[in-house]
Structures are given as C-alpha cells and as structure tokens.
Length: 196
Image (cartoon, rainbow, N blue to C red; front, side):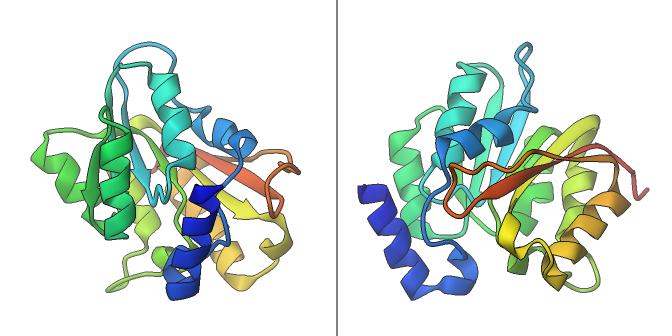
C-alpha cells in the first residue's frame, strides 16, 4: 500500500512523467518479464521501473543470472530501487542514455522492458526512442512495453505501435490483463531491424 501511495504522490507532482495513478499488477509484470530467457546470462534493461513492480519479477526470473540495468528518471525511486534490489544496477537517467550506458559496459541488451509513458517515446531531434531501443538490442533481442486498453485508440498509442512495427520484425499483443488497474496489454516486439 505504501508503494501505491508514493506512486499517487509522484503522479500528483509530475503527471506527464509518471503517467499512471499506481504501480502495475503482478499479472502484468509477469507478462512483461516473459521474454527474459530462463537460461544463460541475459542482459536486461528496464526503462522507467518506478516503484519496482516489474523489477521484482525480473529479478525473480533472472535468479542471480546476467545483468539487470534499470534507468529511472525520478531520483527518489532510483535511490529506493538501489536500496531494495542489490542485484540491480539502478541509474538515475533518461531512457535515451541507454545506448551510451550499454556501450560504456561493452554490452548489447537481450531484453528491454519498458514502463515508460507515451511522452518519453516522442522523437527528439527526429529520432524516436524506439529506434534507440532497437539499436541497443542484439539481433534476437526482445522489447516489452505495456499500454492501457482504454487508451489504445489514442494517436500516441497508435504512433507507438507504428514505431514498434517499423523497428521490429514481429509485434505480438497479449490478452488483456483485467487484474491490472486500469486493464492493460503487453506488447512484445522481437528481432530488431538494424538502422545501420
């Protein structure tokens, strides 16, 4: 309950960057973490982890394997993630810092899991965030993003799906997660198309 109250407080202070009234449900988190391989040492990047609803499930799925890098713009949430999840490298940064953060570590991501709002995906200098995500993934990489079912008709949601189709060979939409408030779906995009 404390997590929900903190989320609501952050939403009240900055609705365009928080963009949700509360944390996502466990059922939605399970859908979002599904592309993480059960074997090997995958590199997982989490964008906009907020209070850690997806982080917890990702950590459980990794079970000490691989690397989990979380980029959170909210300083308080980034510090809280760092304290709560010692196996996560939590960085207070914009999602657009992901390519440099991975390059500095000599890595490409296997999976990117995003809890970012639409506003974060808007193009900057003509480059959509989706292109940076696709370029940060390995050739068999996967990207997971969720969206609320009641806003799927909105132009930003349609633009985001179009960007996913442009940057990935495959896009699959999950069944509605009715237990989430509000109900949501998970978008899973696989096999990035290379810009180079």
